[in-house]
Image (cartoon, rainbow, N blue to C red; front, side):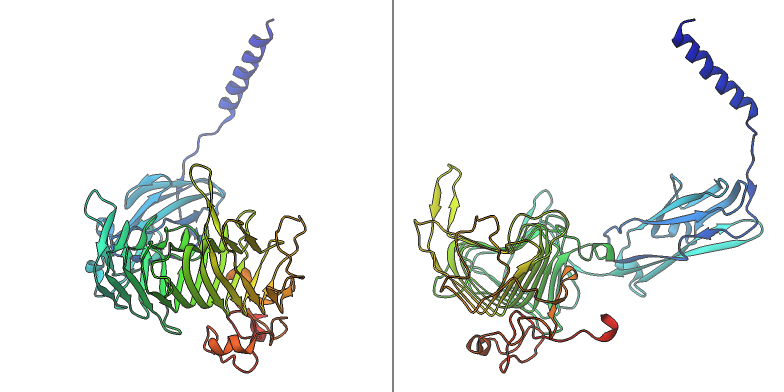
Length: 485
């Protein structure tokens, strides 16, 4: 017999035998309580008219036989602001849902709510009801709805202009598209304001324009994405960047938290060489998928600046310029995927589209009482081109440097431009992988700061005095409470 025919007949017989042995079943209406993966589903905080992320509820049948749930519905029915999908079926009321023995079904929940419809009580609550002739169970649904100032471009466009303005802390600002501070205009942002960016959105400070962020200790200005759910709290790449356009001027950022973007800050070519393009103090730049702070041929001064967890470089000073950083912590503990780049990169050149290397003077790059560290072997790279000046000085810093591959063009240990440098000693941060870069009293940087530099920045980022025995970095040492160890 042909072997293919033999296999076909065997398969057919197997199907017939299986079919003749199978018992028909009918699901019984559930008579005992169902089990749920949660008794309350929190859809967390959302902005008005912005859809939530999807949450999941599992419903378990703990019996040894099929059960039927005659009705699963939302408490507010078709008037509910929630939407549910029950085991693949969409609709706020589902009937005769069956669950196999010792099995489960999935219910997916999401919502979109207009704040104006719930403003009397912005905590919106409903429930999923499971009802049979013998029992009634429910799972609560809870969402906090928040109002906001929504800023967006005209229909069909992606860019819109901002004039002279003051953004207050009365309610958050949500930016869609590219918001541009127009030429020669100034945007002031009040302490405690929250600025949220939709996917791929950004803020540009245009020619001769200025951005002034007036945060305060424990009342910082926060820049982040517009997804408020806890799952998005530390996810990089949710928005684009804050970009200081060439010739923007007199920009100031004080007490800000800038997180979860692609490039936190871009500072372009110098507009006024006598004053910094950007002065940034007491600020954290965290969780960016590419670069924390990128300056290109610009003039930046920073104090008590903290940058961590960036997919490429935490601080990139490129194409020359002028830079001065004191008591700052530049580290990179990115662990999403392997990182080949350092925490801090400094160069005085760029490659044009034609392939030509163009050099520009690095007038100054000063780092005093700083920490430069991370989870790579070498966390500082200096790359110079002889066609332009390359002036730098490192004074009283902790730096991670091995040069095991022999690729670095400088030697920290035998270089007068690296003064009082601590090399490769663990900083002993509280929790570097969760952006807590406070140091303990056992850290090798305790008391190792230059007093003249500390006098220029007399308090750390938390307001603690450092004028008598300055530590390196943005934080003075403090030990963890016992319960946090």
